[in-house]
Amino acid sequence: MILTREVAELKRPEDVVRVRQVARALALQAGFGLVDQTKIVTAVSELGRNALIHGGGGTATLEVIEEGIRRGLRIVFRDEGPGIADVERALQDGYTTSGGLGIGLGGARRLMNEFEISSSPGKGTTVTIARWK
Amino acid sequence: MDKIPILRMGRFLLVTIQVDMHDQLALALQEDLTSRIVKDGARGVLIDISSLEIVDSFIGRMLGTIASMSRMLDAETVLVGMQPAVAITMVELGLALPGVRTALDVDKGMEMLRSRIGPDGEMTGHDPDP
Ligand SMILES: Nc1ncnc2c1ncn2[C@@H]1O[C@H](COP(=O)(O)OP(=O)(O)OP(=O)(O)O)[C@@H](O)[C@H]1O
Ligand SMILES: [Mg+2]
Image (cartoon, rainbow over all chains, first blue to last red):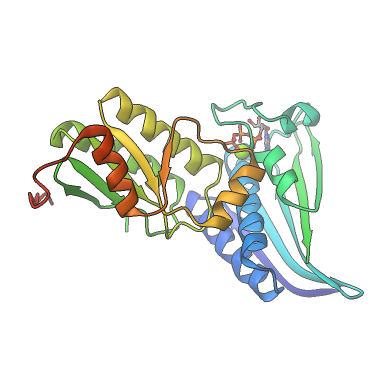
């Protein structure tokens, strides 16, 4: 069951800041403690920036969800950019095509309980992450 | 706000990051800081991140770059006031910040710089830089 849903655009650098703020507010609403909030917001920052920089812009959909007695936060990042040809490689720490540190994708996966990525070259990338309380 | 203020304290510079920075603001700080190190002949830089709620790969890279650029310009950088939740998250993210010194608060950071560089002398020397 979806308790709250927010959709945010990722078109400009300031949008990444805003998505971080929305993620913080929803994490708080879902009842996460400070460390979990920090992990969620950090993962959101990484994937939001990726959608903006590598994906040429996109959207983030943030949802507070409930499954039985557990509550969590799920975020879906979508872009229609160039996509990722080799996802396994992109997930490796240190792999970057843009002079970054190359830790965003792998790091976001470590920070969350669920991580799913689907990408097709030329069509875009969708990354879904979730963390449960 | 489109600039992060840099405060001069004797031979040290103090930067307090108080906003949720977007990437351009972080890049501007990197540039401002290196030019101020040269202009003020600063020997140390204290970056207070106690109000920073996250350090992600971009901010981490910027902090690392500031530290290595400062070192080239003969100034030491100390990162002060990192929140415990931020530290825990950075480790899991995989952000190590090699070569960046840290201290618990501004006072301890200042002590660290003084012990490495020597007393900065002119602590009262206020710089009315705009
Ligand atoms: N949404 C996306 N669209 C297209 N390519 C992407 C996308 N997200 C990631 N990539 C590719 O995967 C690589 C690794 O991403 P990752 O976030 O791990 O590192 P990075 O963004 O290069 O650096 P940083 O450590 O600063 O995040 C990127 O360099 C890019 O080539
Ligand atoms: Mg990235």
